[in-house]
Length: 369
Image (cartoon, rainbow, N blue to C red):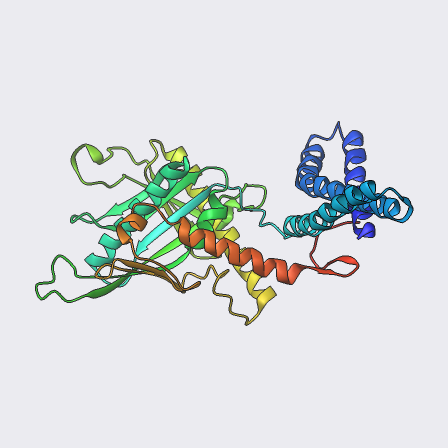
């Protein structure tokens, strides 16, 4: 354990020295500051643990030399407290050592598409759109619609929107997948329950530096924005459609006021989709054929069922249900997100860091050298 503590402290000291030497290199200073900021909570916990070890050693020395019975009782009581604090602090440190997803604090693009079920699927897609709108509102996040394709009965064929707010991806990344609804459609005369579905994709916003898209790889089409008619139809060609030829990805954006704004927003979505594809390929390479229902972001996975007759919402990855469907559709989805995040954290903890009798055996990929 002492060796681990020394390695972390040395790493932190090296970063501070490098920061002093890199003041003229703006980009390197930003990177070093980010690395130091990420390491700082671990260092604070390491120093607390180091202090507890020192207090423990001091208390044990006093027990071996002290003769006064009253003082011995005080030292024993102090040692008991230290013995409780050490494993608790070790566990806190262990949690800090869990590898973090670098995308967790990023803004997101959310894409909802009606799946099987015709008009009923489009109506369900509209329900999901409202659910995430309300969730963003509850979190104090800002939501902006990028593209919205509606049908006349109040349903949505496709909705693409951006949510901006700290930790947006860390919470919403669990929502990617197939959402299934079971209910009696308004058009069903015999009261039979139908099953429909919609897909949700959550993409972390990506910096242009991370994903470079050569101009030759894309083609751009412009057209007039479509709407419900009347004043909602633009007279100018401001809508933009990007086609990325290597991947076949097509992105449409028409909700901004200018062609340039729509192009920039479409490029942001394209970068996010390409990054997501790269990340999925990387994860598949890491886990190979292993199936992990909690951490899977595969859009082919059926992740949740919304059963209207029973007012039940069930997340199939964790087998957790809520029996208050209206509240869930009003944006109260933290019940599922919290449990998914907790289980993911527990799995990472098991696979990345273990404690033994000598202290921490680190198996994660933090660069200490």
